[in-house]
Length: 321
Image 1 (cartoon, helix red, strand yellow):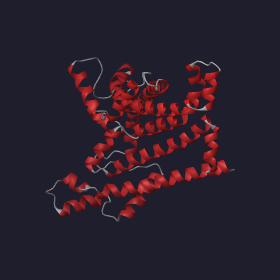
Image 2 (cartoon, rainbow, N blue to C red):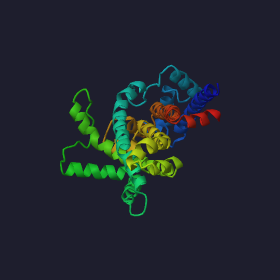
Image 3 (cartoon, rainbow, N blue to C red):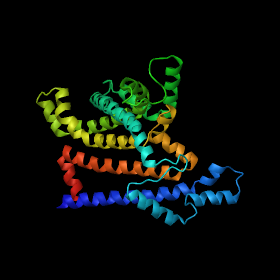
Image 4 (tube, rainbow, N blue to C red):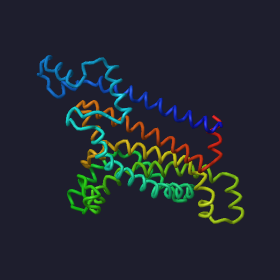
């Protein structure tokens, strides 16, 4: 019964968070310097022209009425129309979501396949002279190097020397599977550098905490090999923080890899959001931010479930709170 109550509270908390985000973003976009009318009509437009454009899009109504109309439409799955392209925002999101989902999925896969082994290896060799310094150095560099710097460098190198991979544009998978992969490999790798470093560092810290536990000492005393200890004791017990971080990174990337999409000229959610902010396209900004918040909330709930399955002890502690 306590578990059911906890999950009910978790869902209610997520719904309340999403509602709060909707209010904040709705108000925030209207507080940005430069209104939609000023952005579209320019600085020399008359007040009459600005008022007419605002009335055309319902921007002359009180803010709380605008919010209520928008919220009622979102409740029916209607995110409105882009004030620039006059296209339904839902259709634009459906067209752009596969791009962001593909590069984010590839980046997460690379992060797990590279970051977890690197973190475990660094933890096992953490003793002086054990060779873990190289792993720590890579993690530190990966976390600290900005994505726009790395992305710009990659674009320059692959454009200048024609190394065989595309550095811009997007090819749908249905049109050309091989071209789709070539167009996404570089942005996915650039996007994964930070993720690999973060996963490796978290895995290292979690594994070091497990390696000092008494049951690991007992396994060593029984003569178990190091990698047998890693497989049977370290990986599962170090998994909860790694799973939590990986899910958070996945939610962040799915919400829109703004810089990478912009640098590589990819028509994803991130670049769509940046363009909408510059144009003061309120409906688009609101929908993109709300989608990002929803992804974070859903991923957090799934992480709680995954951690409970991996380690029932943690699930019991969570349910008791």
